[in-house]
Length: 483
Image (cartoon, rainbow, N blue to C red; front, side):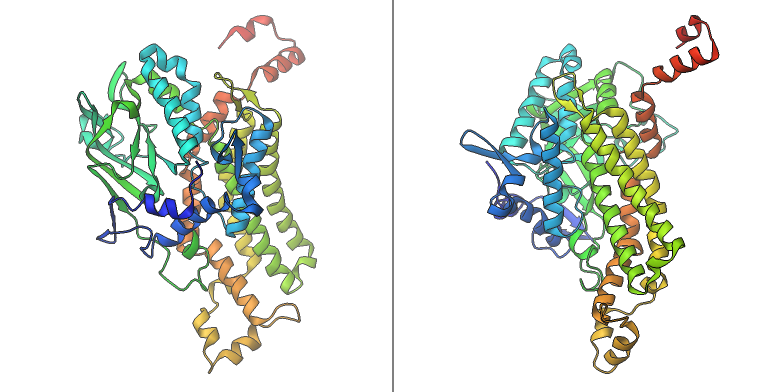
């Protein structure tokens, strides 16, 4: 059934081993660094029960309701409903949240598509996958994904250095496998479970490898430690950093210190062919919600830039309009790829509707690689005041308030307080520690840029271009035989 916000909070008060700033966090629902984002996720849960949002947030099968975000996509309408879900959530929250479950559950659907490959090794694995897909859907589980390892020396095989640098199996038992190592994952400390999978690193060229494994792990598992980076929330007043204080999605180093994974939670294990297949298809669904989030980041960049230009009439200048148009082209480029990917969707090996893979992956490259340049363009349009404006306490001080009111008042439309709020928002979106973190996150969240381009190469259909040039150049048929 659909979870409520309070049920979510209660469910993660489970004595999980969470650390931040050198201290054990007793309760992530009340800790200052976690509470704002926990409250945001709880709000999403509550929205599904409220009349204004219920239709966009949930769907019914018989007498039961389920989250739209976790529904398996069989049609274009299913994907359009997921876009409405994201739009409804982000507009209600008033900001962009990325790790809330809809962006990672698609990795499980990719596993489901690969059940024939997995069945060749062990039929129990595909049954485990299907069971977990249904469990996430029916229990409304906050499901995240642990992917990136600490790396170690990547010029060496994991077997030739400290073996724990990559997560691996240390032994099998009747109850399951015991794993050791570490993974990074955003939002793990306040999620229910993670899909833990191999990174794109070298797990060896043998048919079997202890490093080629994927499994489901509850975030309160015995032996699992969450070592979190310092949070952005609470460092400064929300009036000065409204994004960092509300939407910091805390990243975690998950340390697996001989964690037992029951056999029913093992999704694939040791067989490198299965691991390679999963790595190659992992993002066929999940890339869509990730890229969709960047569309809303583009909207925020456009909004803060245009508001700043309109305040002083700079939007009337052709040079400024050209820069605003560049932001609009970036935004609409993302929108076009997402829309076309669904309009020309493809049936998956297991009967789901995949976004058109070539359009989805080229859209991801467009969105991710151009984001830093678009942030800088918005920074230029906002002007230098985003880095020199005093904080809210200074604006409120009775001895100097009149001076700031005088110099930050623009016209009858823009009083000093509105201008201060806009500049604070722009600073947090573009210039703050949180802003830099988000740009880096978007660059690597779904894998590094070289992997994005490799996904395009593997999914783009080169044949029509080859056929066209063969005919145009008068080449013989044998040139097409070379692979």
